[in-house]
Length: 451
Ligand SMILES: [Zn+2]
Image 1 (cartoon, helix red, strand yellow):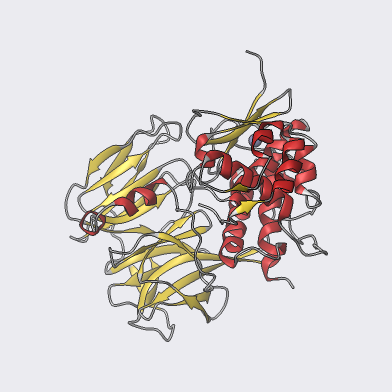
Image 2 (cartoon, helix red, strand yellow):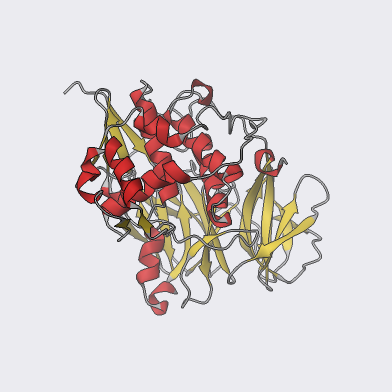
């Protein structure tokens, strides 16, 4: 086998779609003229039924019909050059002639092509309700780019270090991951008839691919901030560059824990009868997509079972479900296997990201109910899980901590913010003293903010 095997490693292993009911007979005939596999379905209107074929056709329709603003300005940074922005569908049919749905694929693989021929192979995961038509369209464009002769390399650094076929060298080369970034960025900024929450999701996806899938870091004009959730559910953005000024954003649908997932935020409501979901900060609403396997599992559980989940860490290559008395680790990015490790003493309270939330980090801190802090993670070599007590003293009385913009900020049990320096804490004046429920890292991007 000397086939050049080109796969797309999905940035986010995990998640349904917008529904437009039916595709007209004439549309179906046009599609069937390009993809003969749909010929039998083209003698009448086709109505979506949730099947793999329906999800495939929905993605094709997304490429055909998504409307964009007429003048799509380039970004000042490397997020959007516009070079793949003309007709997605024409680009796709210029390269792909046949779409072959596979019965099985390795973990994390969504679709692939070979270095010859014009067939795109699509994995079952990609056609589940865990992905939207938007995701699929981006993936299909990515695959079409491979036909032009752009293979991937193994990542030597960053969140995807060691994963084969998971990186391109630099975004300016215009390879397949550049197409992933560009398509999501284009949807986020310039799509005219897409739900605001999907646009926000697309922006997070663009930045995640840009951050994780290139050997040479992608230039992105960005600013690190802190998101605050008040007891009222009001969300605020805290500017960390100057005077800690707060800007009111939207409302969270419920109070709860915020779990970062790359650039995305997942809300685990404190009211355990409510499902966990992606959360957007500016009242964009919701998306139907589920937020990955761990959340799909959580949402199938009873409220009593759900209450066992104290926190969740989602790295690029490993995940940790932190339960009251154990952590369930999935350390191997190539395998679905998981291993439980008991928390030595005390019950889990929450993850403290005192070194910052990083998708590449191999470990994080866990606060237990007895005040003990543990370091937990997956060893890079051997991919084995560990939980070890931290013996150096750390600031106490905190229920959350994030390092953002070079500064560790803690949330106290009393609902106020403090700056943390070693074991020392200094109150931060927010005007919301005693009313802060949760904090999370948040970034803003010049590309989205520019008019
Ligand atoms: Zn690829």
